[in-house]
Length: 225
Ligand code: DC
Image 1 (tube, rainbow, N blue to C red):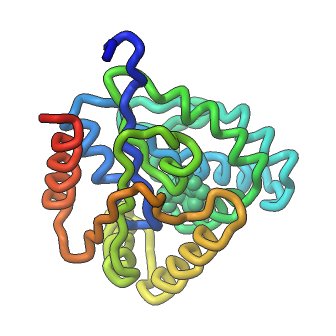
Image 2 (cartoon, rainbow, N blue to C red):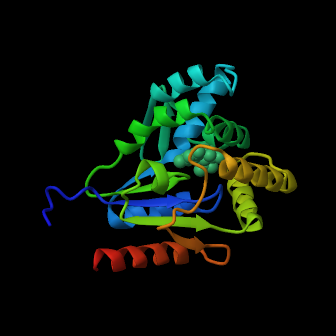
Image 3 (cartoon, rainbow, N blue to C red):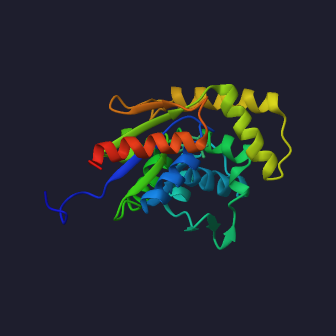
């Protein structure tokens, strides 16, 4: 094995909305000293820009062009769109909902593909989303499907949104989450499903620390230490 020709390793973490995959992926990346890709943020950024420009969420040509030319900059936890800090704005339910709608369009998905693959840089990448294992990094040496019950996920999302100062209603949040799950799982393109070679972890009864520890232990097992 030659280090010079070995592909940069990727840990692909897919899962439904609010499964904790973002937090887990960031912690795993920090522990390994690897890069981190929040692919959902790219769909959310495209959606935010589309909403601001009052584009129809079915206008595939305009939305695909937006996805291709997204003026985004990631610096640590800060996400900038055209120089403006939109890290919190992209987390609103309205933007998440719009992101899920535009994510069904093949032009949007292909417009974001190169940008996601360009994040694969040494020493490694932890990438989270819906199709990291199936489409974006099909050769990832470790594929993980992180899930949790709808109730546990709705509770986590509720706490996150309250902490960010959004006003939310738990019941409508749970309903939206179930709707979004159905849309993400039933779409024709890159639907949310566990890859056949993915390890499935249900984190309903696990803390973030326990989940991170499980992921790291499994990675170190595979990587041989
Ligand atoms: O992970 P998230 O909630 O930030 O993602 C927002 C939406 O973006 C989600 O409902 C579906 C879409 N998405 C996708 O289709 N593929 C990805 N790799 C990531 C997100």
